[in-house]
Length: 136
Image 1 (cartoon, helix red, strand yellow):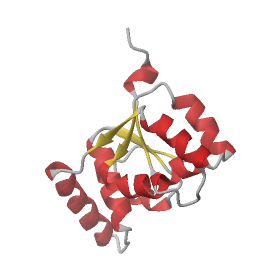
Image 2 (spheres, helix red, strand yellow):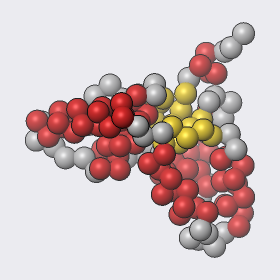
Image 3 (tube, helix red, strand yellow):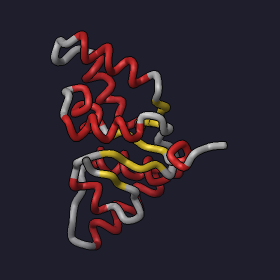
Image 4 (cartoon, helix red, strand yellow):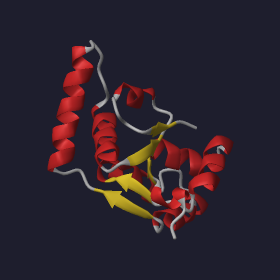
């Protein structure tokens, strides 16, 4: 029998992954709470994967920690239904006289369409109606 924690899906924003790898206490605390739940990252966040793997900080320990985390994650693709949702979200945001970073728009739409809780500290995500967001 599955526990309620196992049914909850989390999508890790690049900022959360970086904070976790940098040892920020609030990110570590949240990760300890969710580490046994299904974890994912959006395909659009593959840029974060590149930044971490290229060794931007030349820190082998962080790269190794990320590889361990990466083994637990699935990639949520950005496809046709995510593109349609992103378009609807952007229109709604613009109608309210606001703007949103394009990467945040695509990541938020992907998490929303996959029923995942997005972990991030980026305030842009609060503009997306219906997005399950957890800040840390």
